[in-house]
Image (cartoon, rainbow, N blue to C red; front, side, top):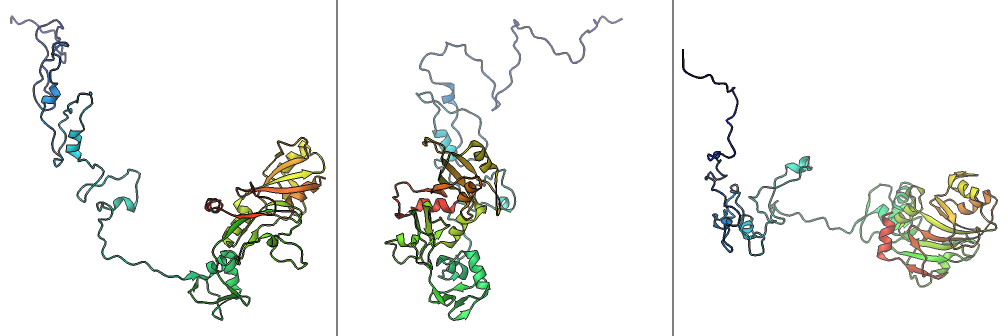
Length: 372
């Protein structure tokens, strides 16, 4: 019989160490494989002694692409780490790359563009001899007609198809024909010349008709454009003879078509004076829709004027360009419009513009109209 005592320890049990034991657990080496040194208790290091981090070896130079050793940079007197080791590794101009540096592309970039190699800094690409762009003063026929203020480009295409446009005495019905400098373009027997786009706004007075020519020799808004010169412009949209307010003029056919077509939803704001107070139920009906002879029509926004003492003054916002639409809406509700004034059109206002005067639009105002 053996004198060996039975081992009650189960497999997998780890040896237990007494916290008060003098034999500490074996410490693992650090990242560099060096044995760890015992930590000094706080307060033993004399004041002013150099930090242990300053005694570490210096970092790798900028040419070395190997992985960093993980050592921390020394700290300066202010307590922040020095920037010098970073500049040694990455260089001072860290955002400049050469042809040997790999390209870092976004993970969201997909498709053929993601497979293109990096070709170095901008301007260093070598794609062979450069091709000179086609420099020509030629212009498409429909754009030529639109620049003359005759019509829009889409309407110019219809005029070309109908055979009413001639180039150098020959009828031209092909689409996309280029007009060269010196060519003579005529429409219905009259010479057409392109002009520089002109944009102006007028505060229309009462008693003038919104048209270019009138067969009855009545006063038109064109009579108020004094000092315009030889520019040929036409009104954008129409205002009744007794309606006052903001009116836009231009020779840009494309922009005029865009501002007048209802699908673009260009807003117009009117100040309406009625013969009697407008009832709240009629205000709701204007928004929901009013039955007219040409269909149901509704306004976008309607409200009483804030500074009015009574409810005979109404503010109306609408995007429709139908003839006499505001007057017909109130006539269908048994109201009579005494005075109608358009105060806003496509973001333009008549502020500081006296009645019967006009002014050129600023560049910012023109850009705003084109972005509508």
